[in-house]
Length: 220
Image (tube, rainbow, N blue to C red; front, side):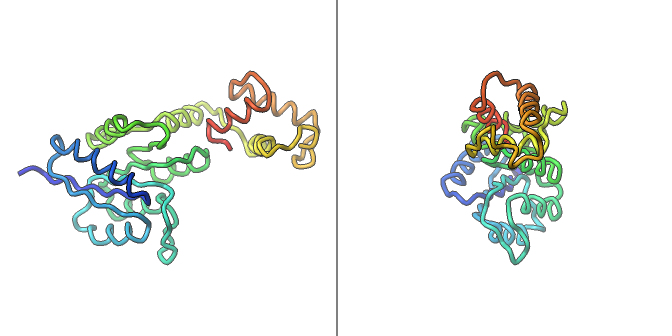
């Protein structure tokens, strides 16, 4: 008898869950019979995890931004992934998100260390299928945005809080001449900071290029 593949998918968009279901159906021949379980928020996911704790999931696909379950202090997909790590330590976790903010990506990698971590804007359906297959086969799969963040992290090329504040102020439309009203530096000190930021991010151009690249890299 083929082994049943137990899958938990957590997302608050029905069409996304249907897409995941179709992908795992495509993997069905290789990985056995499929038991695909869906949850749309922290509450329903919690109840499913509790009911299946003696028959743990093989893999869970978890969206970071889902409605919370405050009564259990579960506020995000990150909290659900931590619960899965506790209740079903053998369950492989694939985190899904649209977020590119470095603090969110860093927190997920540090606290959850998922087998898969995918930014939804990075992947086509075929790439998702390949990523899920890699994780099921025992490997790790990180999409482009996550991999680039890891490279910056390992090379030490990360902006500090003051750098990010400067970029966010520029993105809000604050003029360079007024930045010293918000930042504890002189105008010349702020310009030196901006020059350093552009070198770190390998940017040639003005403030618009700086803001655009900072957005691409998840800083704002």
